[in-house]
Length: 109
Image (cartoon, rainbow, N blue to C red; front, side, top):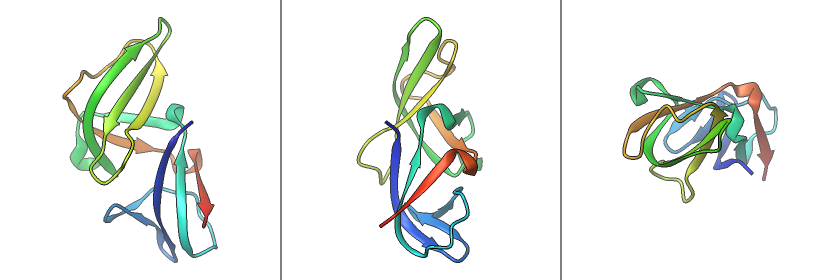
């Protein structure tokens, strides 16, 4: 599973949700989907300096790891982030969502 974001590959990057998003370099221009695995997503407490921002919907702690669901305007499904340890945010918090472009995949089409 992962976060899927529909957008467009252009000569200068991946455009979606009204902004340029971090994505691996690709030479195939046109419609595409950006796939980001939960373990590749990092949450920040400052949404103004992140590619995406949203509101934490819920968090789950599984003993050794946590999963956080974030509602992002313009996306049909929440962004899911996972990391080791206890949750660092709570439901209702505004967060920034970042990721390393090399941890994402661009799927043409």
